[in-house]
Length: 407
Image 1 (cartoon, one colour):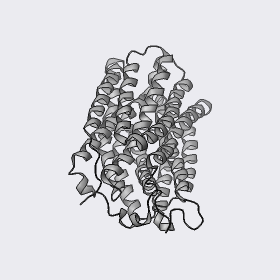
Image 2 (spheres, helix red, strand yellow):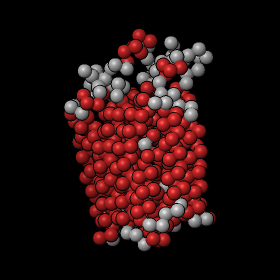
Image 3 (tube, rainbow, N blue to C red):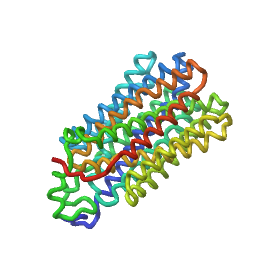
């Protein structure tokens, strides 16, 4: 075997491109929920807390399904597993166009959609297997798809709603997503050794033992490092869904048009792309821990800026800082799990720590909706995020990256 194979072309770059498409579909679809949020409130008269509860259920089950999908991709051809996820994600959007009751919202958005989204962790784990050197950089490039989805799909959905209605918009978004994700999945390969190549930056004598390196999930959960990563994930996933679900309707409440409010998500997505690439490279060069510290500081600053915001222009700097910090943290979890625990069980360890974090993501959208329903303001919710982001900074300082040699 050699690094590039007989043709001299490294297939890992194809894997990266495919992963970008898949993350674009997954996260663009997910973050479009904030755009459809007001249409659902207007048509059905549900409270913000009840409506946001579907997003919370989505996030909780997403964490569980990620573990299952990561396991399935370890055992079966990821092209079939992730292709099936793409079909289910598109189907969920098509079903969303037919909802007429609250239980259907919770079933379609809260249960079916996260099954389709659960390909996310498996895709990241596949990319990590293809790159030893430049792992942070390549993970950052892949996460550009997540930002691209945020830049493209929520504004597209908002425009479609303004031209047609929210039901037809869901049909269009679901159809496009289904086709793109199913086709993209067919180009995935789980491991470079399957096609006679090596992970980028790994020499052949290292390859024979690389899969044996690192921790199993059972070994990882007995370490302090694992629980610190879980705590960091909790902080991260508490703050991000709260904003992505509520920021559009918060902005329209300040007098911004629905289309311009959706553009706030586009700014988040654009700076997310910058954040994942800058912090991915920073993690490679200066260490993942330092990059995490910087990102948590920026997240706290973003929420401090948002607290006194009363003018619409102030939302745009918030979106930029928040998007950069969001991207910075998002890109670093997969490399730091590989650094701490190796590649032996990378996918399932990453998915399990992500699931611990989904507890925060489950609570925060409902909490923010309840705070607004009872106080008429999101200020307390934003203050809580300042405190939570500070906790994340402290947890990161306690992290001690070391050997990834398991038992």
